[in-house]
Image (tube, rainbow, N blue to C red):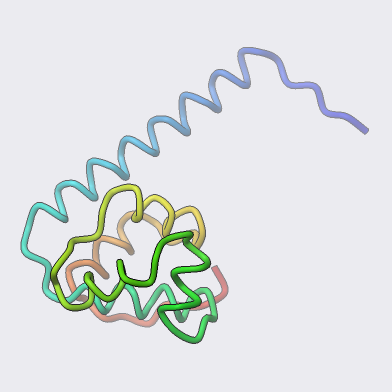
Length: 113
């Protein structure tokens, strides 16, 4: 059974998706412009949510080189907006959760996302 969507419905969905991406970008930019307390909290939470073992598996899941995570963990590099988008898309974590984790706020995150 095929569902037919009108062009108006599809345009409305696209508009909502674009607005959500813009909201996430704005939130990430506002957060990453500040000094981060501990980016390790975010990376560790993502590893837990995705039920991975380590940064090597995380780098594979997100499609980035493992050196990136080493640099982030040693604070030689920040977490970029494109990387945050990948994390959001892969984990389903909401922008508010990502912001809290970037700020170093450790909290219990279920891996049922």
